[in-house]
Image (cartoon, rainbow, N blue to C red; front, top):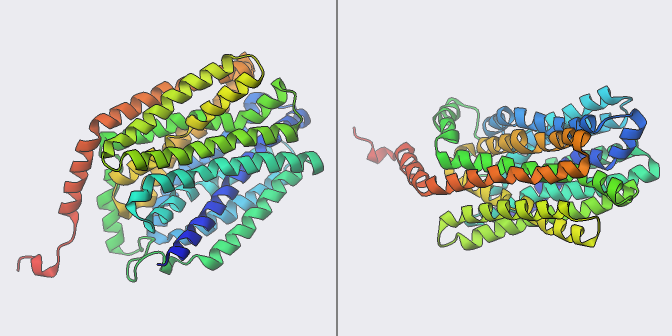
Length: 428
C-alpha cells in the first residue's frame, strides 16, 4: 500500500485510541462532583475507574483472538461503537450502581481496541519502527487522557458532569463512522492474505500451533509482567492527579483537570521518547531495549518518591513532571519486545496478552488500590506508596534481559521449522 494510506490508517487508529481513553478518563475530571453528589468514598470512585481496566484485562484476550480470526477492522468498529454508546449511557446514570454498569460496558467495548489497533499499525510499517510506533500508538492513551480530563473538566464546569460524558460518546461515534468508511480489510494485507487471519480450518490450525508461544519464553513473560507493573504507576497518576490538584492546590475542577491533563501529556511524551530511544540504541545491539525499560522504571521510582515527599509548591511540580515523563517510558520497548518474541500471525492476540497484563497488573488495580490507600492514609500518603511498584517492574525487566538473546534464537529456529515448504521441496 502507499505510504499515504498507511499513515492515514495510523492517524484514524490513533484518533480512535484518543476517543477510547477520553471516554475512559473523563470520569476522573468529575470525581469531585460525583463525590459530592452521591457521597462516594475514594475507594468507590477508584472502583468506577478500575472496573474499565479490569473488563479490558479479562476480555482483551478472547476478543483479540476473535479479531485475528474474523477480521480486525470489523472488530475495531464494533468496539468503538460499543464504548461510545456506553459512555452516553453513563451520562444518564442516576446513581453509583447505574454508573458502575455503564463503566463496565465502556470496558467491554474497549477490551480489544488497543491490542488489535496496534497489530493493524505494526502490520503495515517496517519492523525497524516497531518500538517507535508502539510507543507513539500507546501514547495515544495518555493524550486521550489529557483531552478526556481537560475537556471533560471544562464541559462539566460549564454544563454539568452529564454533558462531559455525552460529548465523549458523540465524538467516538463520529470517529468510528469515518474509520469504517476509509479503512478496508482488503487493503491492509497483500491480495490473498487477509489481515484478520481468515476463518477457515487453515487459520484455526495455525492459531493452535502458535498460541502456546505466547508464554513459551521467560523473556516474553518478563515483558508482560514488567510492563503491567510499571503501568500501575501511570494508571494511578492519570486517575488521581485531578483530585490531587483539587485537594492540595485548591484548584477548581476545570483548572485541576487542565493541570492533570498537562501531566498526562508528559506521560504520553515519555512513551514516545522511550520508543524512539529504544529503536535508536538497539539498532546495533537488540538487547539494549531492556536497558531503556529498566532505566525508566528506576528513574520513575526515585523521582516520584522524591516529588511526593516535597512540600506543596514549584519544586514538587517540577519533580513530578520529570517522574511522569519516565513513569510509562517502558511501554514502547515492552511492546516491541513482545512483537519480536511472538509469531506475526497472532500479533493481535500477543498484544492482547500484553494488554491483559497491563490491565490486571497495572491499569485496573492502580486507581482502585490508590483509592483504598487514600481512604486510610490520605491521597498524598497513597501517592507516596505507589512508586514502590516500580521495584517489581525493574526486577522483571532484568530477568527478561538475561534470557532475551536465547529466547530470540529459539523462536527463530521454531519459525524456520514451522514454515511451509514449496511443493518442489517436499519429498515425493
